[in-house]
Length: 341
Image 1 (cartoon, rainbow, N blue to C red):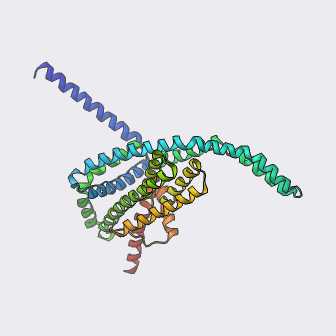
Image 2: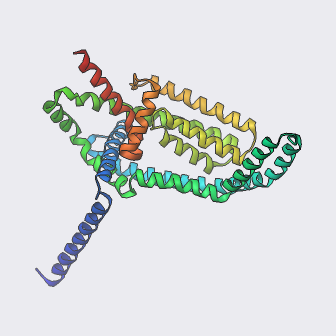
Image 3: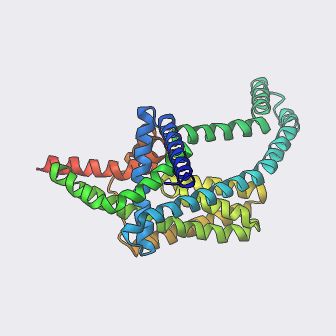
């Protein structure tokens, strides 16, 4: 081996060692706690079925699932990141101005109502207390604190960007072997019926992927008409697509975000009513799409479903919000069948 080839081999070895050391550092830093592993495994489970559903939609063979996983991760992270950034940049300034206007108007409102309630000292004291509390609470600082609280919850309980990206990439590598793993687990624990859980999660991911996309398209078109802003419409549609994966409460949160944006950008009750009509139309399209495919229906009460969403969020953070209902419904169904036997 000549000197040139020897230097090339040495440099390649050093680069491989540095990459392995950096990967080990990221793994230790992000997966150093039990909770971190739970969140990572939840993301891995969710990503595996979503990537598999995306591969089925585009009719990609399982051996190319890793490539689908990489493309899915890149598109989702870039698209969602840009949409959320543009949404925040467009909403916060007018929202802050609206809150400041409310603070400015409060003394006039207090004076007007105070004249009407001069004969009632108790009512006057109550109005003064409400006015002082509102003036201390509202404002740009409150908006900042609320956003920081939401962001803190998402980043602390949702796992790091490294965990999510790693989960998507690993899921693409595991999909070709998923059926063998499920069959092996089903043979070892036949009472658990892992094939039933696998089928339920696969159908659920495919259904939410298609129906969430349908809801996002409807909201995108509707908000372009209302807001006349492609960036805001894209941001709302992207958030609605992601939130739709959370059963029951996800679409409700999407409507709240849509309503807040509409009231800030176009503060008219007619616009809000139109956005409600568009959202209900999107829900109808969702149901129509779900009816044309093998959809999953969870035969559990609404209160139990909400409890499962909350419990899943406590146990596994943001991915637990998504997986709480399907896994909880599977366990409830398994328990009820064992009682019948």
